[in-house]
Amino acid sequence: MKKTPRSLVRASLGGLLLPALAMAQLPDTDGDGIADYFEMQLGYDWQNKASRPADQDGDGIPDIFDDDIDGDGISNRDEQAQGYDPQQASPDIDGDGVPNAQDLFPLDPNEWSDLDGDGIGDNADPDADGDGVPDVQEIALGFNPLSRDSVPPDRDGDGVPDAFDSDRDGDGFGNAMDMFPDDPTEWFDLDADGVGDNQDTDIDGDGIRNEQETALGFDPYDRFSVPPDLDGDGIPDALDDDMDGDGVANAQDAFLLDASEWADMDDDGRGDNSDADIDGDGISNEHETALGFDPRDPLSKPADRDGDGIPDALDDDIDGDGVLNKQDAFPYDRREWADLDGDGVGDNSDPDTDGDGIANTDEQQLGFDPRDPLSVPPDLDGDGIPDALDADIDGDGVANGQDAFPRDATEWADLDGDGVGDNADPDIDGDGFSNAQERRAGSDPRNRNSFPDVEPPVLDLVQWSATEPGWLQGMAYDDGMGLRAVWLQHSSGQRCDGELIYSGHFRIQCSAAQGVVGWTLMAEDKAGNTARRSLK
Image 1: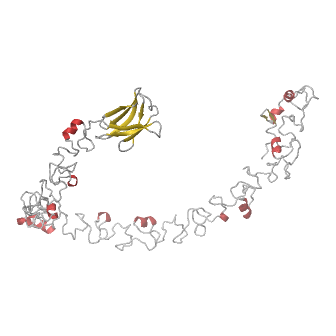
Image 2: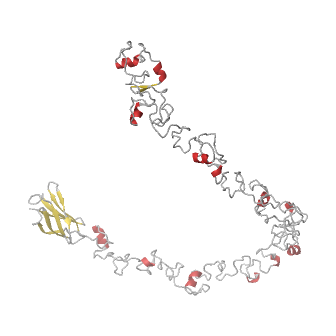
Image 3: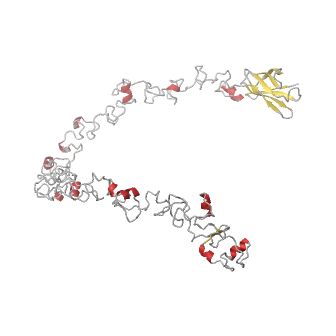
C-alpha cells in the first residue's frame, strides 16, 4: 500500500480528518504543545502546562487521536495490518533500505519507487517509465528504461520498436516484402523506376498513363497491355480524334474503326456506302426507287403489311403467311388463312374448328376428328365437355367421384345406400321412420341414430351394493336413442350423479340416500324422456 504524506493528514477526530494546516491554527493556551481542543476533549486542564495527554511522537496530536502514534510516516492501521507495532517507530519499516519518507511502498520490501505513477512498483513494472515500450526491449536496444525521453524509434507507433517490428512502417506489408519498408504509403515498384506504384503515373512503364489504360480497359500493371493505334499515325486511338484516318472526326464518324464508312442514316450498324436500305424503312433502295419513293427518307416508303421487304404492290402474299392471296380466306391476317365452319374465326385460333360444340383438343384426345362435325364424342349434359373428360357428367354440380348417381342430374346422394337417391327417398337415413315423421318429432332425418323416441327408460334390478356401502346399482333400458344420464334426487334438492358403465348398467355413489326416505332414482334418455323410481 502506498503511504499518505503526513503533510496532508495528521489526525482523525471521530472520523474527521484534519490537515496539518488546520492543526497549526488550533489555539494552545498553556503552550504545552497540545491544542486546547484536544485537552478539553480528553479532560485535561488546558490552562496548566503540566496537565498534558500522552503524545509519543511529539507532533501535537494526542496519541488517542493520532493516526500515526510513533510518527514513522506509516499509519497505525497499515502497520497493524502488516503485523508491525504502531507504537514502535522505524525509519525503514519494510527493511528495503529506503527510509519510509522516501519509500512509495513503505510496507513492501520489494518495491520503493513508481517512476510512471501507475501504482505498480518499478521492480515489477514491465514498463517502468511508462513510455509504451517494454523495459527488456529498451535495454536490448541500449535505451534507458527509466526515462520517458529515452525511447527506441517506432515509426508506425504500434508500440513495437522498429528494430523488432516485422512491418516497421505499418502498411501491412512485411519489411522483407516491402520495397519501401520505411514509407507507409508505398510497398511495390513494378517498373523499378524508383517511384512507388501508389504514386507512379505509369506503373508498368509502357509509356501510357495509368488512368488512360484503365479508361480504355487495358491493364496499367502489364507493359504488354497497350492501347492500339488503328491508323498507325503514332497517336494512340484513345487520344486520336480520327482513329480510322478517314478524314471524319470521331465525334461525327459512325464507324470509328472503319476507314471505308462514316455515316449510318438508319443506325442499323451498316454504313450507308454498303447498305441496301439506307433509310432503314424495310424497303430496299431499289424497290423504293422503282415505285417513286425516296430511299433516303424513312417517311417515304410503300406499304408492306408483312414487313418482308417487298411492297404490297409487288407482293403475291401480302400477309406473309405462306398462302397466296387468291387462296387465303384472310389475306391480311398472317395468322389465319382458312375457316372450315364459316363462323368468321380462322381455323388456327378457332377452339372448335368443325363447329360441333366440342373443343378440338378434347376431340383429338378421345380419337375424334376435330375437323369433322359428324365425328362428335358423347356429352350427356351438353356443356361442351365430353363425358369421358367431364368431372361432372350429369351437370348437377357434384363431381362424379362424389356423385352416387353420376348420370342422373336430379340425384347425387344415397345416405342409406338403398339405391334410391336422397332427393326422392321418403326415408333418407333408412331408420324406418319417414323424413316427415322425424321432422315432426324433432329428430334428424339424415341421421339413422336420431329417430323419434317417446318412451322413457325402464329401470330394473335396482339395489344397494352388498360389498360397497353407499353404492346403488342397477340397469336402465331404452329402446330409443339411448341413455343420457342417471342420478339420485332428494326432495330437498340434493343430488348424486351416477355413471353409465356398459350395456345399460349404471351405479351411483350416494351414502346419504341409503336407508333414507325422500330420494328418487332418475334416468333420462337422449330424447329427454325421464323415468323415476322412489327409494324405500
